[in-house]
Image 1 (spheres, helix red, strand yellow):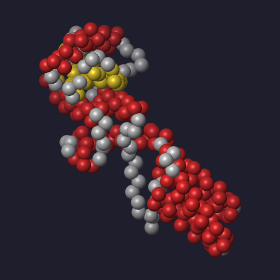
Image 2 (tube, helix red, strand yellow):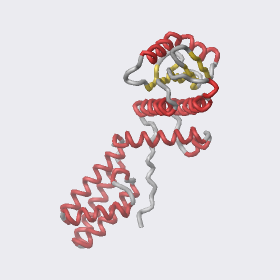
Image 3 (cartoon, helix red, strand yellow):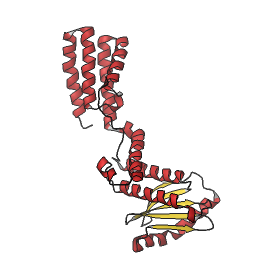
Image 4 (cartoon, one colour):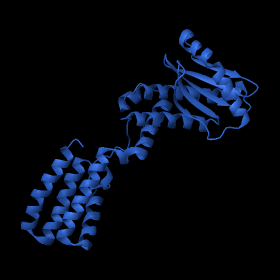
Length: 262
């Protein structure tokens, strides 16, 4: 039976770069899912915190974006002075949707496609969900089961989805991943020198299958279980003396790496 230990393949924003990635990912998802053209997250002072803009703008998109820039000071004043929460404005060039994000920031979505205001309920509901998600991220709140339970289902699901996206894209840069790669290389070299390449691959495959995950996602409990398994195999092949010596050396190494801060 595989070793029962859950691997949490989600990840919260630990750096400014991670936060920016999450914000841009959320804007991009909302823009694409609702067939909008441009998405931006701005402060009421006009600063752009994150955006999702196509690499090339057509003339109508460019015109609408310039129209927004020309009205930006007025929009910021409405948000900061009058606590505007939601606005939908239509122009000849297209439609501008604005949603407040707390007291000092807001979202802007632009679309040049024909839009009927009476048929926008779904889009506006999605924009509100995105605004709540962006506010949560921007305020650097944790994404825990208790926190998620306080939100409605759509917001909680989107926050959980973003932590998974961040994990997939950035886990390889974490210290946990780097430690695991170092440990995996160490055991492969040490065990291989004692039992040879053929038995090595068989032993490692069986051990990882028993533990129930791959080297990249191992925790302390996983590695301790893994070590016991490979030592059992080593004991069968090379005897107690070699296995006892390896156990002392390898356990000291493993504890040292897992306890280090880097």
